Length: 356
Image (cartoon, rainbow, N blue to C red):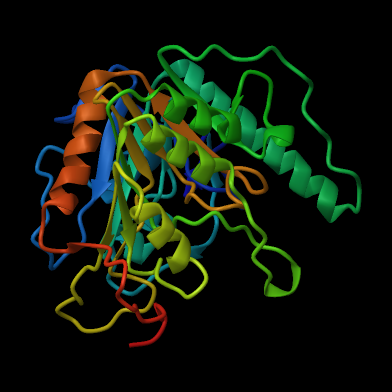
């Protein structure tokens, strides 16, 4: 999900564009924060999972909307509501505050707030918020140009951003504003710097992209970096969803899991007590913990088409407290009842998330 809000002191307005994960408002005390960043997490209902020290996105989004003074900018892949949902309550507050942002895996979808495992960040760090805002402005102008059948303006070239502290990277690089790093370069760099252990949680992983006529071209950028880290002796613990078992992607998962130092587990969440819900009951977080020192929270699955050809945002935090907490979220699933090791000789059913 991408929600971006900015607040010049004028009449409140709401702008919505199609993007990937961000939002902006005033500070509120939370149980788990590092300077400039609060970790926000969706625990799917009707599971044994729990994160008492992390706030859910619904109340966080309501605070952000209630705090808005003049303008809310939302960059989002899509929106979907349901009667009586938490999202419905959030939308009621779309009228209202400070300068903050939200970047995370949550779509603007009622299921993301109740029935999908999601992870995001409420951001008050001024530099990061400004970068997210710059991305929204670039994309807003791009959509206006497309609507007018005009060429999309490219951002001015800028200096390569520093890779220290906490910072934003985004894709696709050619449309990044000055000062925003390239996520397709940054992810392999971070994996190349790993020394002991990398914990990753995703909806999907495969060295495949999306081409014309339903083709799946080979995309090896991330997969090569993961395999290189494992070859150096780094322990790779990869969690993926049970939507990642289709006939095209599964062989690549198995070829990865057979390697020394690589473990892959598939997570299957139980059905909700109310019965089958289409496109729900799945892990959708996109996180990484490197050596308990570096955290990655973002909007991209590790497939082609995300870091190279669509708008996605990722936050890199060189902060041991945040990295360890992301690692604990991973461990809760990894060692829990819903994650099972990928069996190399087993056959898995094709996923059908839209039908029972």
